[in-house]
Image 1 (cartoon, helix red, strand yellow):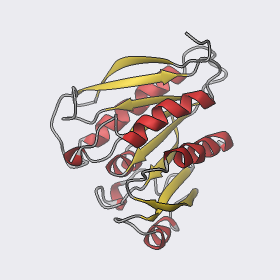
Image 2: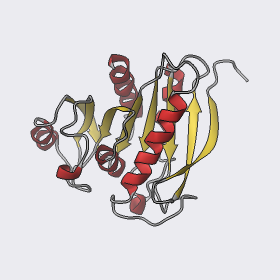
Image 3: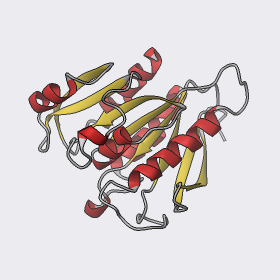
Image 4: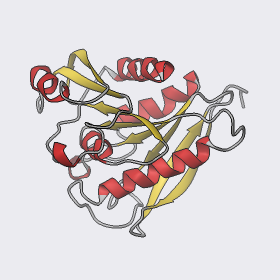
Length: 218
């Protein structure tokens, strides 16, 4: 095995209501500058932790020194429980944040890597609603801001940094609409993904680069 090859392993998570979830971690071979938790799109429309964009981020980020943790929401793949329309899924995201924080704290206690949430579509709304004390920042990728009510989200009024990535031709939330929503959010920046639509085919590399730049500034 090449010394620079990230180490990937299967892990299990347990949400606070006792639901067991399947997950996977990809850990860089060298120094880790952050741990990014990847939350996948809508389970009822084929979304799981191996969706193309999530899969690209899971493989690309560790090559830049960013560890990645991806997981299946309840009712998806080998995860237990049932789909809950974005409600109980917030417990799943919180469990993933907690596991990422535990992994980040291993080793040198004086140099703990920050934990960053990065959710796409359904996973964007759910992960912007979820929280953990050790979470350092949120990234919302084409988050529709309608699956979970904005008023019940943890991210908008929180002082921790937020990056909102909005496709130029998103079918569910236009950049103009998103800009109006995010203008009231605390410590939030919005970036438009030129020529992209909600499904971001052909834009995975750009998303990975934007996340990498955001993490580097933390």
